[in-house]
Image 1 (cartoon, rainbow, N blue to C red):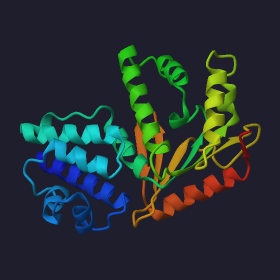
Image 2: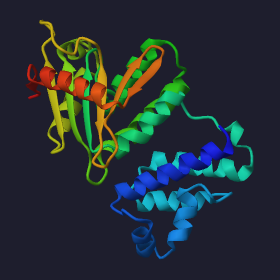
Image 3: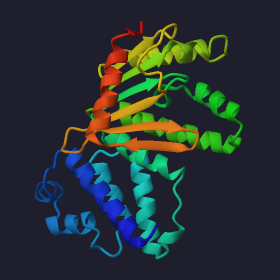
Length: 265
């Protein structure tokens, strides 16, 4: 990535989180924090040649961003100051970077999962067994990935004003883990999450055809003027879709599938 791209990336991130925190203008945020709109503007527009990592982190924390978002932003700001932005490497595939940024900003998250327990609801033991079975990661990589997943979960489920989440789990995803040592723990996690006021978990029988046989997908919704974003992960990465026609179509598929599912008890 070039320095210009890193500047714009951080600027966009700061702007989105400011708005998410309820400050519709730079003036309002500047008044609250005891600074000036020009200083905030220099960060949000990317005009500032060297963004101060501590300031970037301080602003994001004030806006309520989860710690993993803050940490990555501070690392990018530090990379700019070091003068070698082309050495920046994301801690994961590039397509996953976008999901990590979108999840904590979403106000609604609708998920259909056909084979596995969806990532944000997995226990550490379930996630470890799943990644180890894939055979593509070292134990160190698995631990790092699980740490990130726990941070994502905290940023989505435990933040102030958490997103409303509806999850449809295919019955086969529960059947697959029966007989394992982590079955009861994972099932208890799902039941506990289902009791959260903003979370609804449904179970879909897989003995019949259903609208979501196309595979797993996620729809992220936002309260501002941004369009919904659809997300589908496959063996070659992920596909994001933000056209209204397509996201509306997938929302209809989700609604039709939801009508066939039953709330977890």
